[in-house]
Length: 370
Image (cartoon, rainbow, N blue to C red):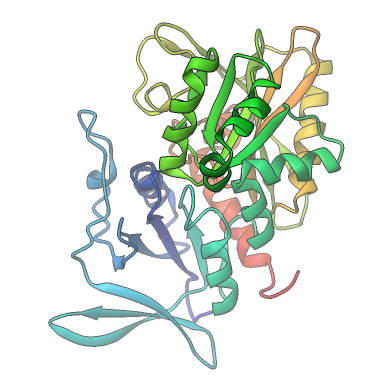
């Protein structure tokens, strides 16, 4: 630990299609961190992968008039440099010589999607010997890839929807075979990038005539594509999981999302540019028995892949009360209006306290193998 207040590097942006949403999340967390308790450094990763020392202008990191924010890639570059005593943040500017900003004690990685939420950044931080908020390398990678996530959860006895994975190579080599395997799941289907997020590149396929275009759309975002059976007549309910510094795992009250109007599913616009057709019940209206089963299954899901810190578990609830885990998100949207913080607020943990609990948990962890 550095002398004085622990130094927190908040990292946001990134190379994935969720760059803008990560910027919004970064601005929200930067505004919430207790500056009397922590020394905070904002680090942006531009869309081309360049790491920069961001300005900390939080107003620039908001969605305004439906215009999405982005990291300013022209700012001074930054890099992590491991020393004998810790890991320093080195800042370089074309006009000046490189300078050492100081030691980094913990990183709050707020990247969504590949090249950040998928274990890549976590691996870099492990190599640098820096503590960080959230899941480690394996849990991040498995949870990011929906195909492998389903394999891991099914092996742990967690119910998931039937699905197949179609790779870009398989689609090019045996298109008819991919069509046949997809059709065996029954129509309608959902087709999505296996390692995507924020509902980008997802299509609902009503019949065979729409399958090719949906797979080709998903391949634009990811060469691994998940084709998944449709869950009709279900409720979509989410539950937050939080691990605290003493190692205990807690679950939030759940929240339910109801989509109407022109939205057939919870797509990007419904999530981030909501109008009158998006309705949220937080907490969700569930009976005690369903609540208990949901919270227990959320913890099982969290532990099945070895998550740490936080996660959001998304469920399908069928009319008979049975549960299926749709997704496990290791770095859920984290603005004050995002589902994860809303669920914890409904459970008595306000946004700034939630941020503080996550930083305390990360600082309590050892570096290296755990």
